[in-house]
Image (cartoon, rainbow, N blue to C red; front, top):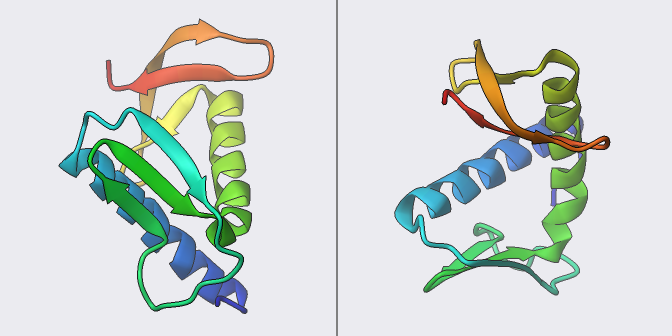
Length: 107
């Protein structure tokens, strides 16, 4: 399991990439859930895709949550989203909740 901040950063980037690839392989994912797994048992991805169901092993959530939280705060303060090249692109809000804004980049 990741111990240093560099290892955590690499792990998070790998997991985010695996989630992105899962949605690219199957754009019809209709359910996302946690798979109870207190620790990583194998040197493999914690992302599981079966039919239209996406599972995330629970051990990696503690690493993913701060990353996702920071991305949402960045979006909310700048009303912009970083594209894959690290450049900001404007987004059009679908709706604005007091606690969170949702958007689709590049529409």
